[in-house]
Length: 124
Image (cartoon, rainbow, N blue to C red):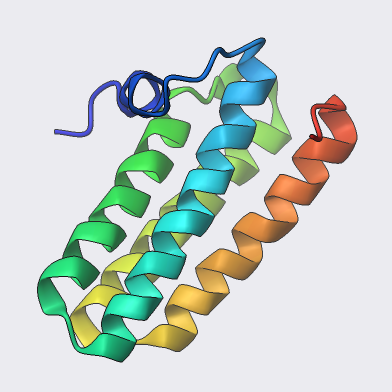
């Protein structure tokens, strides 16, 4: 269902990707953008858009899970659990129109993005 989300995001944005590190950065940014749109939809009472944007965030996180190499150790296993939890929070945010849960996911992804940029030196 969510197959090849990273490629689709790349194609939609028509952006040249210099490295896999840049792609991960773009996926993290995508979650933040989609969550912001979902938050606006909740505030506007627009159920269709809320569902659409939250599903986009879930699709991106699912793609992030699919590219994890769990043989690489503790960090990969930690991220696997963290991503799973963030998907659960998004599902609950969707069911309950819960901006607080949406904000919690955004907060986690802001921290992940910042850490990713610091460790990979792909910041803009």
